[in-house]
Length: 226
Image (cartoon, rainbow, N blue to C red; front, side):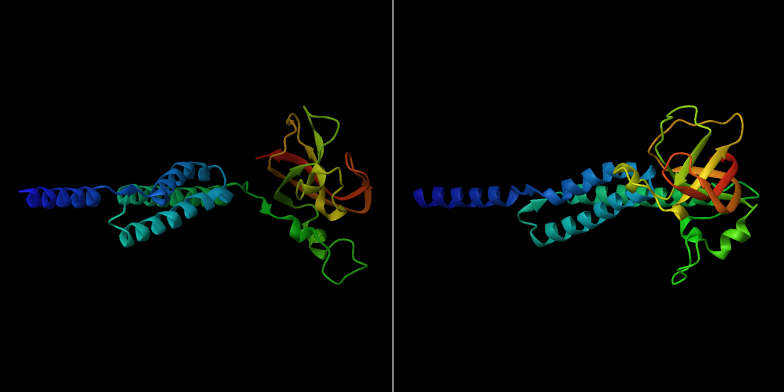
C-alpha cells in the first residue's frame, strides 16, 4: 500500500513537472518589438524595429522547439512575427509612396552629394553639374541652420546635416544652400528634416551667408516647403 502511494506521488510529481513550462522571454520580447514596430511608419530609419522583432521571434521559436519541455510562448512569438512582418511591409510601402510622390511636377530631385567638387579637383570649387542646374527647378532635403530668427522665417540656410550645428560649427560651402521662400510662405525653426522646392541659382562669386559665418555659392529662389 505504501509502495503504491509513493509510486502514485512520483507519477503526479512527474506530470506536474511536465505541465509547468516557463514563458519564453524571447517570445515576449518579440511581441513587445511588434508593438513598437508601429513607429516604423514615421520614418524609414525605424524599419530596424520590425526587422529585429522578426529575428527575435525566429530565435524564440527555435528556442521553444529545442526546449519544449521547459518553455512555452510559441503563440506569442508567431503573433509577434506576423505583426512585425505586416508593419515592415506597410512601412516600406508607405516610404516608397512618399519618395515617389514628394517631388512636385516639373522639378528634379537633387542631393548634396551632387553639389560637391569632384574628387581630386583641388582647384575646382563647385562641380560642373551645378552650372547645368543653374536656373532649373529642383527639389532637395536638408536641415535649417540655426539663426537668430525662430519664427516667420523667409530666408535661411538649408544645410546637409545638423551635426555641425549642434556643436556650434559651420557647414562647408558646398553643404549650404541659401533659400528664400516665395511670398507669403514662412516657416518656424525646427531641427527636423525639411523638403524644399525652388529655382536653383549658382553664384560663382559667392555672397555672404545669412546665418553661418562665411559665404554661400548655392541659392534656392522662390522656395516652397513640401
